[in-house]
Image: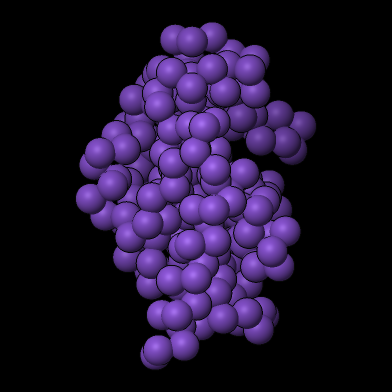
Length: 197
């Protein structure tokens, strides 16, 4: 089995790539969704978050996302701290997910794969890229937030150039280059790699 990481900056369209893979019957683990679920369902983790961020991290038992996002984006040390708490649990969940599948290729989508060093746990990594202006427009429309807000979020992630150095494959999602063709080509190479092992 090959484990493949999928990442891309905010608004790059990595979820589109994941939807295509799922439509082709490949298992895709959504790290960011699992992380959000764990922040609510894992009582020990919940308490650790409250210890770090204070009681206002949760409102009526629900994660106070706006408050957390504000604190994390404005204080890099808190971003590191939450990653230290959440990522080991997400890794364990992915391991369990992988063991339950009988597919030769298993994919894991994560927003900050390279930034956290998590890319090292995968056999190969795919980076989804798009021009900055397109990404900004996509996120403004998707999240109904201001341009400045999107740009601030983008600043917390590595540049595509920096991530490209570590990626095994790059998918261009610029609304012009056919994404499906790029995915099929990568799958062909990955399957060949899997069978040659």
